[in-house]
Image 1 (cartoon, rainbow, N blue to C red):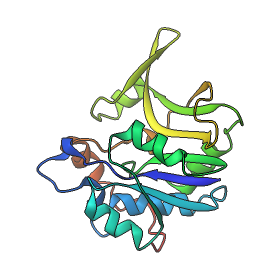
Image 2 (image 1 turned 135 degrees about the vertical axis):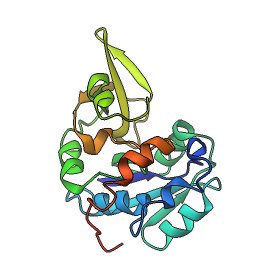
Image 3 (image 1 turned 90 degrees about the vertical axis):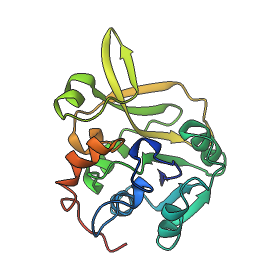
Image 4 (image 1 turned 180 degrees about the vertical axis):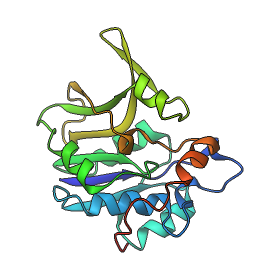
Length: 197
């Protein structure tokens, strides 16, 4: 399975900070996520989808993992672009989840079902209890959920039917989108291991 880290966003909601993926004390956020992918036993290759919108993150990542240049047209468009250039099963992870580790990614990778696009959600109530800024939501059977940005899909089947899985785990829910999120997560910035990237 390929671990695809989406790392091409501008992070405009984090102003005045420069590129959010380069934040994080002695281990920048993007390197934590790359390290988590590299430590996941199911992942045989880690690829960072980068773009002209985040040149500092691209420079940092291309020295440590394979990179794939995308146009920088937004998360969904860049994801479709990247999947069109990969083969086989892909574990998609946004690069702004600083608490990810190999164990939770191994659990998610085990939920991959060929022919379906498995999307990981957290319940809205759980996400709200963490105190993080609102994310992109979806309602299923009348209940609110929040996308984590993590999914497992076959690269050659981008139009696969969706399959939703809910995992209420802080490592998946703690998405760093705003300065407020960074303040909350910054206190935990040394929790993830340094995987030597």
